[in-house]
Image 1: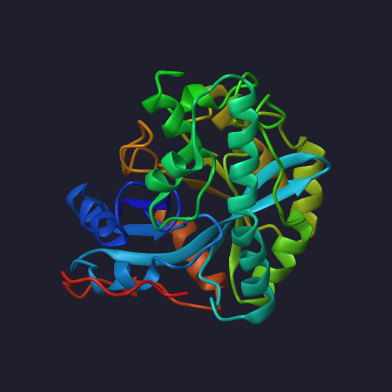
Image 2: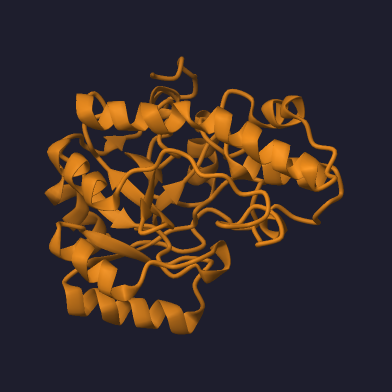
Amino acid sequence: MRIDLHTHSTASDGTDTPAELVRNASAAGLDVVALTDHDTTRGYAEAIAALPSGLTLVTGAELSCRLDGVGLHMLAYLFDPEEPELARERELVRDDRVPRAKTMIGKLQGLGVDVTWEQVARIAGDGSVGRPHIAEALVELGVVPTVSDAFTPEWLADGGRAYAEKHELDPFDAIRLVKAAGGVTVFAHPAAAKRGRLVPENAIAELAAAGLDGIEADHMDHTPETRARLHGLAADLGLLVTGSSDYHGSRKTCVLGEFTTDPEIYGEITRRATGAFPVPGAGGSGSASPAA
């Protein structure tokens, strides 16, 4: 089985619609794909309606968190999307994205960059606006050559010249909320140093003690040495290890299935989850209105 547990659609900051994403996942030879848009479940209905035969969908989200001033992302799998407390927190994060983006645009304008809210809103479309949309605007303007090049201290990285904070969850609260909603938590790309400051390993140990299920060790932003170190850390802490592409369509260079998760780990994730179940493909080809 080929299993990719971290992808994004136009419901947040990917360039594939949810329907296109599952079709592309099937074409890439995946057996299982997780839809993990940032702080939203809006893409679920469309992805399920278009799910090809032979492909299983894992519903999830990537939750925005912050610990001691350091941003981190928490992948949440197979939780009940209607659980009210977790739904309320996701809504708070989403509602803060627009004012945050406008603040960052104002900072860029102060740095002499001719970016506008209208340009960023056009790029974001119906998705939850975020830094990748602003980064793409910088690419369009010729300020940086690629989206990744915008995530530096000079521009949009944590603490960068144009960075602005938004409402984010405490990761210990995120673990508690996801568990209460029947889900499973995995710390996304925990050692992606080029994204900014990292959560120290002693904090990962504390998260593990609080119920964190796993860490995403096999990821394009981790060197082979880093991946090996994270596998060792996971073994020491009793954590599951996942591998994923973090696919964003054409917005990033990663491809579906670039890194994958061991079937036994996937099986353990599904065994631990009680809030939702993986959805097997039924050969759908249509689309549906996104869920709230």
